[in-house]
Image (cartoon, rainbow over all chains, first blue to last red; front, side):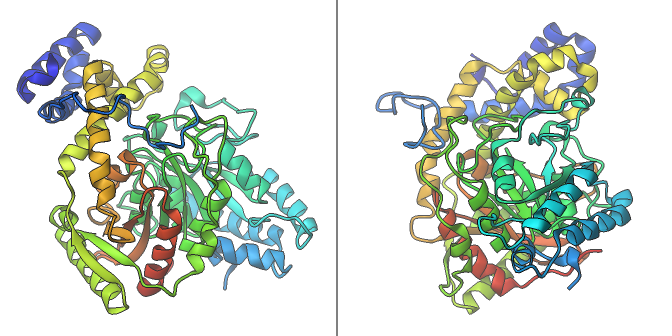
Length: 69
Length: 445
């Protein structure tokens, strides 16, 4: 589970995935964006949410109560 | 007053009274564009023939019963909005020959109100990250911001009285602040997204850049309204925001976000404190408030959601046309395709959880107060930091920036107000009052 790891571990995992998906040269070019994304994942992953009592939907409803679904 | 200095509401009123010819107005603006465009590079497409034909028709109908509130007023449209008869390139050669057969819903509303579409303004490619060719009218060595770069520069340079913009992170408010104009990002769902190329579905907002709060209010009123083609479009009918923007008698209650002073450039922080003092001296009640979480947390949640949604928007296009992508957005899309689905959902859950606390900040005040951007416009190698605009895109709250003075380097600084949930009426009223205290900026060129 990528969200449970440190920023450095996440960055390494994403770099490996990038190498498989795009090749080593392109993966190297993506290192700056991978670093940023790893930071976001680590920060977001550090905030577990207990689903007990949580609203029965995961999506943010920006126009809550007024969305024509 | 020279014709290019007229605001939207001024020009519309003069045309309605037959004191101003729409043909002469369009001609004056085209002359202004011809003089300044080689240096500013704010336009992708100019529809000279179409605009002149529309102006002649408006002139013939001026003063008639049933003409709209924007009758004869020329506007610029960010080049991700569909405008029938003009290409929508989104800043990429992939779409250079894409001529949509319909107007975006909000563009159709503007046309119905009598506005003339003068042309398409420069957008950062696909409205995300890569710096545009456009320059800041206050100083060519600075960015106008982005991604609504061309609209911000063209409005500041008096090429047009107003332009359309869109915001997913900070793409209306930041360029408006950098160029010294008014930029409004209404509530999520207030203005239909139909006919606008998506950036990130749950974050995209449509809005405008202009030179007065009254203009921003009028344009929002015209563009707002339920659109059955956009399922997130609000069903509640919009209020008359122009009326709200003319009620300047009641001093607002403002919540100064202290966290923004900690994060802003020192000059901007001092400038905001001085602006808050001026508001207090003029009768506003200013109290200090704190964010319920860090800027970094908000930015991480927004960026993850944005990157994953963008990855899906762009996956097939990038696969088929990699050469048509600028470097930064290409990197973003490629990395976005690697991010796990669980992370996206977790970010959306945190977004939901934070929302009541964020909305609660505005419970005891009319609007929140903070800088429009962290500081003055940086050099053109980037479009600037979105950290001060992104929260209001993430939580869908209405926000507006207005010019509040110049930095020591002579570049514009802006203050930003954030209104309550669906509270544009309150926000425009407070913004008009604040605008009256701050006074106008001169023309940059």
